[in-house]
Amino acid sequence: MKFFLDTANRDEIRQAVALGVLDGITTNPTLVAKEKRPFREHILEICEIVKPGVVNAEVVSTDTEGMLREAHELAGWHPNIVVKVPMTLPGVQALHVLAREGVRVNVTLVFSAAQALIAAKAGAYFVSPFLGRLDDVAQSGLGLLREIVEVYRAYNFPTQILAASLRHPIHVVEAAKMGAHIATMPFKVFEQLFKHPLTDRGLEGFLKDWEKAREVLGEIVEPAGARKGGR
Image 1: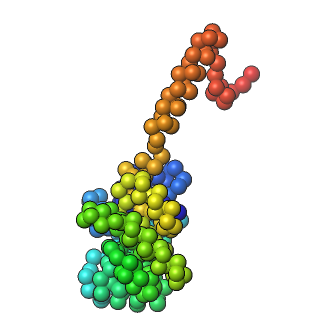
Image 2: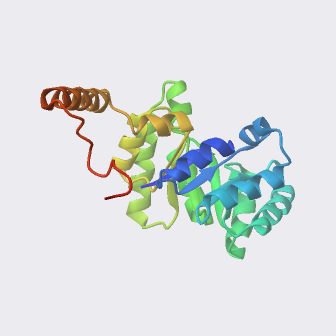
């Protein structure tokens, strides 16, 4: 499974890149607006931070002509940009044209298996089911993901499933178990994946034992590699 961050914050992105497990970024107009910087300049900087990872940038037009115009512009900014279009009739029309042109498209705001099926048939590169938002209205986001995985496997669609709107580590793990290709998540959820209270407790115990050992030996015992230089 690939890990994407759902953010436009450069500091968060740099921290994730430094850990060596980040594969890409998803953005949307809301996330980019929070950064209060010129849109093109900001997206291009993110591309440089995460390269060779992909960066998903979204159109804001609601008509097909406008989406196509924006998509062509976005795709021309950087080779690692994937264009996001909404799961609407104009969006699918734009997807159909863009896919034939070789432009990679992420169909976003997907909330049913039928929508995911349409997106795959029209040539989507990514499809983004929103798990958390379904949970918010008392529907099963993971249930939807399971249906999409089943449909795509039945027909061997090349479209990659990008599990979105992930609210906690359980979403990420269950999506991985089902076979989702990508999980995109806020930085907070990304951080939570690294943590477990038993890890912290175990490390604390090891350090206490180390201090006790030093006291018993009556001398300073340095860990291997702690000394710099040599004699």
